[in-house]
Structures are given as structure tokens and as C-alpha cells.
Length: 292
Image (cartoon, rainbow, N blue to C red):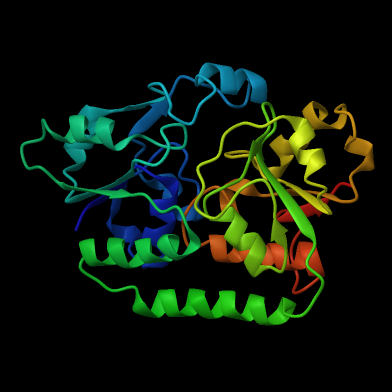
């Protein structure tokens, strides 16, 4: 079995299934686990996120999660890798290569690989993707899913009966974009009340006043694709906003690892939030840090 992953979350799933040795191609954004660094990269982007600001990146992609040719595929390299299965998505063109672009790239290959599109919107669907991918790769994910569900149950049990703070999760800083899809469920699981978005919702940019009007007890900053260090460098986009200094509590979290990508590590995200909201368990400064 030869696998090409065109979605970082799919690479996480392949790792969870213990099949990294079968991974022959990945995206330029697949950075976990460390062993994937030696796998050939088959995608590229013209946008340098290390240079552009949040506002500039948003403008470059058209200000919408519909995307606009943000990623390209090295079709020649993809063909040379001769994959049996290509893992992709059709949920957000700004987050990864679209299903349409992948389909166009593989159509010209002599032996057409199976293209599997993953489109989870909820926490349950994220876990369901493990079984979907496992089946496509000729294995099973029953044990892994059971273990992940047990960890979520442990989080719920740990915070049961505690006061539930009101939580606003922000996945982009300029413009302000609330975190939807599975993140509200992560917050609920960790003993909070999610604001600004409902489970499974594909959100849109909002005004800062909407955040203030929601009266959050805790604000989570977990920008899509930004590790905590990059979020801290962009924090000036938030700190000058009216009412910022009146927010009770603000945290910066590792969005790419635990919240932006619909892979098995969203379970760790719920565990991190249980600590943020209730002091349950332990976390590292790399996972979350309080800045207010």
C-alpha cells in the first residue's frame, strides 16, 4: 500500500493507524509526527505565511474559506510516487488542496489511485474518519477509536458538575473569525459553554463587538495554521481593540496541533481545554499559555 496524504489531518490519521511507513507523499504543511519530514512534499503555495500578516493573508485568499487556487500540486512528482490511495478533503480550500484539484491531478495517471475525500464537521465525524481511512487502507481503527472516546469520556467526567465558563474561540485574528465545526464540541466536552458558533457550523468573519456582546469569561486564540509563537507575534492585532483590557481571561493555544485539523489530536485539544477552563490534568506551555 502506497499512501499520499494531501491533508495534515489525514497524515495524523495515518500515524495513528501505525502506517507511516506506507506514506510516500505529503503536503508542505504536514509537520507531525517528526518522522514525516523525510517524506516527499507534493504541494506548494505562493503565500508565505511567515512574511504576511493575518490581514494580508486573508486578503490574499479572498477573505473567504472558499479559497482561490491557494495550493498547487506537483503532478509529475505525484505520478512518480505511484500512490494506491490519495487522501484529501473538500471542506475548506484555504486549509488544504481541494478535492477538485486532486481529482484533476490524478486523472492523468496511468493507474488511477483511489481518491478519498475527508469532510468531517463534528467531533463524532472526526473520529469516524479514522475508520473510513482504516477501511480504505485495509485495516481497522476500532481500538484507536475506543481509546480516543475513552479519553473524551474521562475529560467529561473530570469536569462534571463544575461551573461552566462562557468561552469564545477565535481561529483567525484579522478579520476575526470564530472557530466552528468541532471546536464548540471540544469546549463543551471540557466543561465550557461555547459562544459565537454551533457544533458543525462553517463560520464567517464577525465584528469585534460581537465577541464583546457575547460576554465571554474566557477567550481562546487558536489561529488556523499559526503555532503559538506566531500568534504571539500577531497579538497586536487584538490588543488595541476597544474592550480588550476588560476581558477576564485570554489564552493562546496551539491551533494547528489540537484544534484546526480534524484528526485524532482534537482529543488532546479537549484535554488541554479542560486544564484551561478548570485546571484539570496538566499541559505544557507549548500547548497553551495564559496571556491575561
